[in-house]
Image 1 (cartoon, one colour):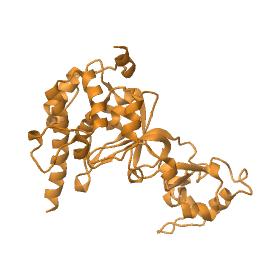
Image 2: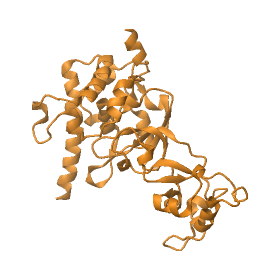
Image 3: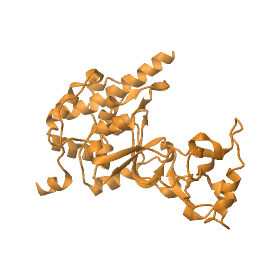
Image 4: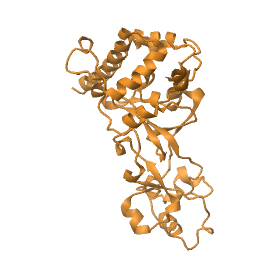
Amino acid sequence: MEEKRKRFSTGHYAGNKWGGKYLRAPDIFYTILEKGKGKLVELGKLADVKFGTKTGVNEFFYIDKEKEGKWKIENGFLKPVIKSPKESNQILVDIHSLKLRLFMCGKSKEELKGSNALKYIEWGEKQKTKDGTKWCNVPSVSGRKNWYDISDRRPSLLNFNYLINEYGITFYGEVFASDNLHQIFTKSDIDLYLNSTLHWLFQNLFGRVSFGGGLLKIQAFELKKTYVLEVRNNKIREKLYMRGCKSLFEEIGIDPTKQIREQEPKPLPDRAELDNIIFDELGLTKEERKEVYWAVCELVQQRLSKATSLKK
């Protein structure tokens, strides 16, 4: 029991507030909410969720290796950043493998005298957009005290890719994030849960299909409404986070070309270990656990199949 208490912190479930949007939710969703009373808590109560950094002029602020070598900008002004979810094929972000750096300078030009950073800023002030507007006069940057200063942004340990094909990954590693991701600031141990199959189910219910190809989008306010548990287990974190992310169906062990409910889910060992900790805490039966796997597979399959049929 002591081990169990260390792994979890109880939350507060405020009751069923769902409107028509959740009429498509499978029965297991409501079973989870019922069994999760006093345990599940809205993400927004444990974390601050913010849209990633909007630079205003990506061509200036994102520095690739070639530009870094050319300008020799001082390291103190270049920060590790994940611009696209495609830049990491695993949950743990390896900052050394990231292709870009974010130009982060909170100093005035006077303070920058003699630096390569100043030379880069002065070069940037001569560049123009396709419509002839100087970068420093673009409306999204011109309102700043110094147009090149985005030093009010912070790096985050957790970054969630909110444009989802099958499931959203919550990347782990303290880096800055572009506006292709949501930054999650928290002191709670929720990262494992955010990468669990149960959270994939919530993602597919709380998000909205608003892009071609069946892509699901989860706004920051929608992500805040998803329910979470604190889970503490470094052994699972080490195993799950350092391997490559597989497709949802590979992770769960379901063949999407066959009838989903005629199959016994066979999740990958580290995923099964994580999911079972959460299922145990919620008191889900063996059949209810299968329902979680079946339901998320069906939701994803239906969404992607519908998108494919609309293209024909």
